[in-house]
Image (cartoon, rainbow, N blue to C red; front, side, top):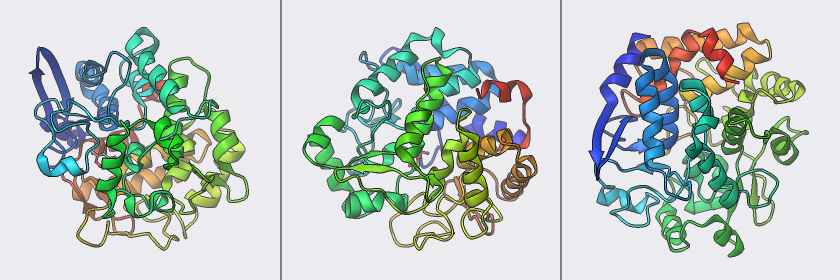
Length: 390
Ligand code: GLC
């Protein structure tokens, strides 16, 4: 796909910071100039089609930002520190910080396997996994917990509101949450011990399980099923503590475990047949919407009001790709092809936008958005790559 290559190429940034070289794809140069962890993983997956050296350099830049204890932040400020107005919303210890103190869905090991090679040959990848296990597996059952909605990558999804209420991303109180968590050193265990919310979130743990498996470690999928699978509703539901709160809104994250190669087939089939192919929920012309169309919070055109709020209805290409992987694995080949065709048509008409109206396909949000280049995966299945998905 020429468009994918062209946008990745024009968003490419290279430089040097205090003697360390970096190279990565800006998610969207105007709006998102820095290096975002999961955006880079998706960009590298597509780069491997055109330029393997860049795919590797992109992921190497994440590793170049890694702290000696293994931690890699959600956003890395290579060229310039975070701008003053964004300080209120960005999870940095101080304005001059080189990276945030928070995480994003940990798919580096999986992305490395797809785009570069065996992640077990790169000890820094295992070091990040070890940091996550030591600091975020709060209940020692092999699953990770997050301390803010945006650690899931799904910033203002309505599923966070039963947990964080008016302190959720995109709500007026969010800067207060950032301030409080900054004071607690963004330490999940400390926050939990003080009675503040932490969340065992489905998408983060899906990525976690993919990465563990890519690295040859025991899968987290059985624990994910054990803790978050809701047999009655036929989907995955997060769990918040304190209080074992189970947020009710149905979002695409409830279906994300479809990307797991070791998800039990009967669970995958329920996700597909009861939800993904359900016209009231996720079977829109350009699917899957980030929130089920049946939810009162669903907003097809993005968000209403003065504050930009993400993941409240529009369709994102990374989500489509993840559920598409599962549909194909389970043999829903024609349905997967239809889902891909809907999004491909929208991309051809509108370009690589950040997200799309799930009903009309209208392009929304940032322009020339890098991870929307994942449309190349949906448009052209590379058999060698498909095998390396796991
Ligand atoms: C938005 C998205 C997040 C992404 C970032 C950069 O905050 O919600 O997932 O990483 O933009 O593209």
